[in-house]
Length: 280
Ligand SMILES: Nc1ncnc2c1ncn2[C@@H]1O[C@H](COP(=O)(O)OP(=O)(O)OP(=O)(O)O)[C@@H](O)[C@H]1O
Ligand SMILES: [Mg+2]
Image 1 (cartoon, rainbow, N blue to C red):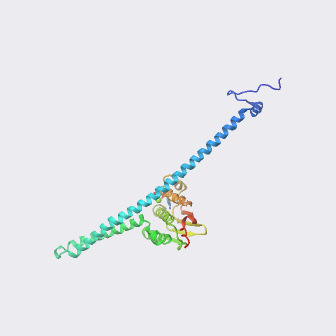
Image 2: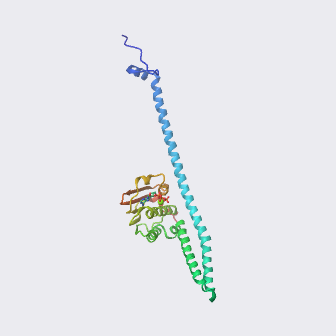
Image 3: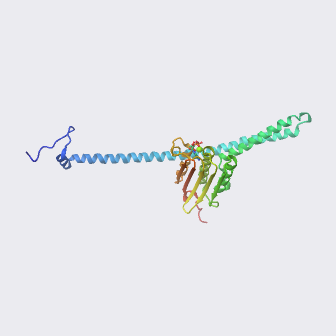
């Protein structure tokens, strides 16, 4: 029997067996195999790059949409304040004039005028509240820490759930976009506590350390489920996360059944504090 028996081939014509392999190693077939693997590695890398690119584009789109929404809110707030606010104020002044000028025969109208005036006062208050909700003007006027303290107080009085606020960042000069992002995140988280948590207490903290700003909103309610945290339908949560990612921060939201929910946002201090101006 010859020591050099012809190599066996399978149905596709490829060499089989040990000898086949040995021969393949000496021939171009191995080049083809290695070549295929290289092509696959390159394709995989291209697909990864493509994925990365579209993720970046989606992130940029989300952050653009959030800023468009913010400026639209400011525009609506201005319209509301200027149009409705003014109209309601003149209505109220008109009603006050009527009340002062009714003749003794028209006295029966006084009760009606009083109730219309009360309704108008209620509307003016609502417009003011909606305007505050839409426009984070307080952030500019009071600074972030005071605005959050007042948001916690408003939450407590309007929702009826005690809300503690703690901070060590009272004098920290935050830049405007970061302060507005943090305010919007806390606002959305507190709205979630009011609407979904069934909590007895809530706490908001705003703490700075040497490198980071950490913001937390916790409640002792029913606890958000993992599924809802990651759900594509949780648009409020997606919005909060996008605001954080736009500032290179980290976002964690965890729930523990019947023990509550904790939102923790950590932002690099370099992205949130005001750049020091040029030296004089
Ligand atoms: N603090 C919380 N405690 C318990 N469940 C929560 C809490 N926050 C959120 N959830 C759950 O997660 C879901 C998603 O929240 P998300 O804020 O994304 O949406 P939403 O509040 O329902 O609507 P919106 O878009 O108006 O914010 C809520 O519907 C609720 O079921
Ligand atoms: Mg929500």
